[in-house]
Image (cartoon, rainbow, N blue to C red; front, side, top):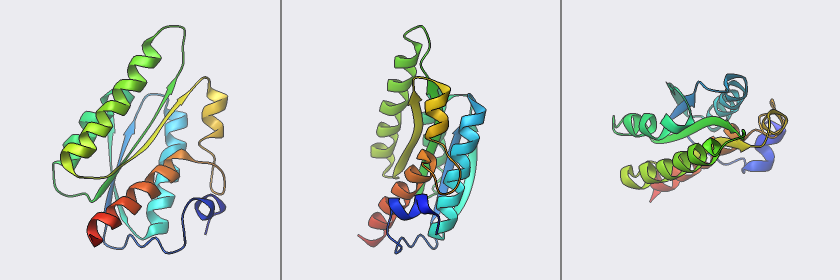
Length: 156
């Protein structure tokens, strides 16, 4: 088991039979690719199956997540993206819109969603939160959280 996964969840996370939708933003692709790698690792670790779809940016993630959730083909979702602060209020609008939208989709559909969207001041902070296997990776952590909630829902 990877060190990053070990510190995040117990060894007994059994996602066998679950399908996890990984919904990724294309904007800030280098960071997002690293988060997706983490999401894939976590899905594999838990024994779940992954399906993937994309959205242009983090602001569009809630709609893409809702579209996938409404297909009835996924047990959990994880959204991954990266919003880096700039010189205008655009950062706040995108970050808050994304987070609020994801929460709404999760509650409206009953499909658990792991929030793997980085909201950082700069690229260095993003790199620190999207490390390779064994390091801190928000995509990995968010996926494990979504799988844990899907197991709770399945076993309820």
